[in-house]
Length: 52
Image (cartoon, rainbow, N blue to C red; front, side, top):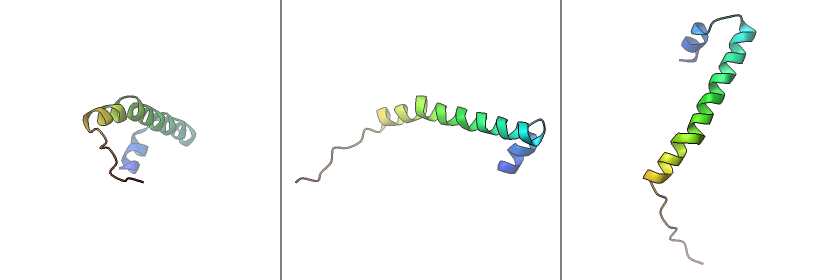
């Protein structure tokens, strides 16, 4: 999969590295901005059952 993405990025190697870092940053941003809050709202963490 990574080879497929790498082959389809345009430009020389140094530009591909920059493009790959931008893509990774965009994916991480999307996860923290939209996906993780949605998962937390849909699947509420249960209260802990461990007592002291």
